[in-house]
Length: 106
Ligand code: FES
Image: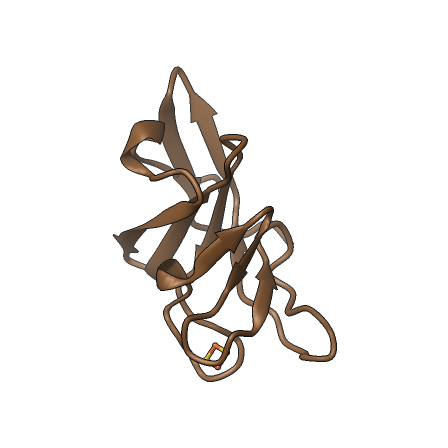
């Protein structure tokens, strides 16, 4: 099922930061890199559920604000030696507007 929802404009997301979007599937953190790449990751650290949207973005990774696990924004995978994965969602930019797909294709 394709279920794209419009979630605002790219300028609404700070560079090297995140904006939280509440969805029927839970809170999703929309990240923007310094190069204006956009990623969507569930706002739930795979360690103990920390709010990834409040972490520090460096490159295409975010450091969780609670215990500093580093999460890859593209895959949701925790950097070794930590193990775990945050759910990622498809996101796209069309005419500077952001679209989020809530159902993950498997
Ligand atoms: S909850 Fe994210 S590192 Fe512990």
